[in-house]
Every structure is written in C-alpha cells, then in structure tokens.
Image 1 (cartoon, rainbow, N blue to C red):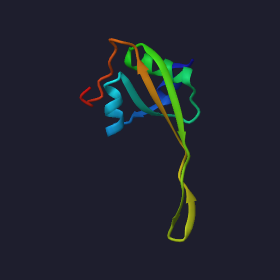
Image 2: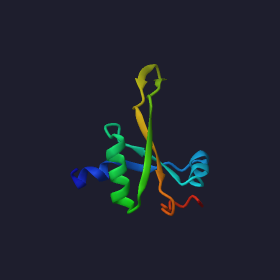
Image 3: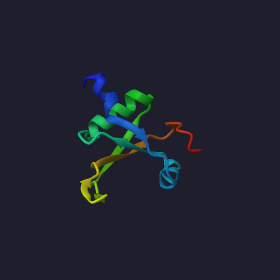
Length: 97
C-alpha cells in the first residue's frame, strides 16, 4: 500500500472515558477514514506507531439529520476503529494507561 495513504487512514485518537477504560485492556480507539478497511487500519497503526496489532474492530456511526434555522441538513458519517495491541506493546496517548 502507498505510504502516503497510510497517513490519511488514521484521523486522530479518541480520548474519552470509555476509551480510557479500554486502554487498560491494551486497546486504543481511533477515528479513521470512512473508506478504510481493517487490514489497511492495521498496517497504518503498525507503520505509524511501530507496534504489533493483534486485531482491529470497526464500527460506523451514521450522520444525524439536523435542522438549523429552518434548513435541513445532515452531518457526515464517521468510522471508528478499536485496535487491540499484542501483549507488551503500548501507544502512549496521554490517557494514563
């Protein structure tokens, strides 16, 4: 896969209370590009952070329909990935894991 595309797959880490709890289980949550798949996410995380990934789970969040000042609109769809790292691997995102 083209290395330039790997940097476009991972948007940013999700730092919430739930993702902090997952960090204790050696899991990290990322917002990823909608076009990405599990294999490309795994390659992108391994290449970017120099870690070994054991599994990747993804889920899509559909954009809500909203009304603003009488105009109907729709928010963008989003995709998230829960990346499970192998034992002994760690990504430090400042979550206190």
